[in-house]
Image (cartoon, rainbow, N blue to C red; front, side, top):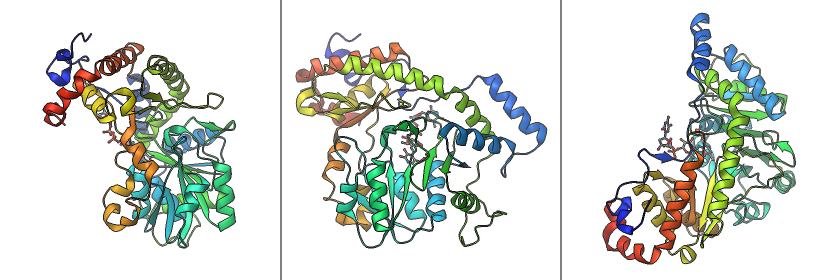
Length: 405
Ligand code: T4K
């Protein structure tokens, strides 16, 4: 435990943790279960090209999410690109700037321009209002992001899309195991796209998938994903290799089996974080609608520097000194990242909520490798920082802020 500020790792004290605690902790199935799955691949001598494990994973995912089709791909970014192509989009797509850069870059790779929208300060998601404000004549679709697993306002976005004759699809990379009005995310809009990156609650090492209830669109997704497709969607001149391998599918199937258990554990730890951080001045933990299903993988705190006495960036530096690798997701907003800050300078000062959130939000560690004791330790550290903010701040300003940044 820390007694004096000289004990802080940032000021050359011993770090609190002996190994890093990072966000998006990986979930690992037991080795024997993984080996059994891999043994089957070796026995069949069939590594990829839509093998039995990928087909099984697609069926299970569709079942789990209550949709007609799940189409597995090599990662979430490729799944977004394939979805944009399968939807036959042209021109531009309205998309939040407050998201992981992959959302916008996937559009660029698909030959589309992002039209950056601001987000709602409470939900951190786009709304019909923020999309309307950003709308341009060449927009052919809206791509919402269910950030932190909290659903976009699907009804109002659907109404806007119908009114303007636009396609609507969602980046659901954070939202596996989450619901809206009791219905699992995966069944909204024309297509929804998920990530199964190693750091996600559902993990196939690398991987992703797109879901749809539309048989024609499923056919289109399967066609664009593969150069050698036998499917019937022939209007797609550009295709790509976005296929998932059998080894990824083995991992994904095991992770899907473990998903309910991992979500339950996350929910307990999320509640513990909330309990420990709720009374700290300047700390506001982003809450979920507890009537809905949620994976609770994202512990997001809004740090108000005036209330806490330390900025979000100060907290990140201080935690780093204790081997807690908190993240500044998403800093900066996509509109301030290359190539967009140069190609589309009109957005630079047009998205005040995105800019504000990207200066204040902090993601703390959660996921399978994190224990209740870790959460207690992280929260005790944060409490110590805030209680000693007046003494810490001048030390940070006196050089420690830059020294290790
Ligand atoms: N849309 C949204 C809204 C997204 O958030 C993402 C991805 C996508 C689309 C695209 O989906 P993918 O194409 O990725 O399937 C991570 C992930 O790479 C990325 O999947 C994720 N979002 C993004 C938000 O975060 P990083 O760079 O922040 O984390 P990374 O990979 O450095 O891992 C964090 C820590 O975990 C590391 O410091 C070390 C540790 N780690 C990581 C891996 C992969 C391990 O110990 N072992 C490991 O195998 O990007």
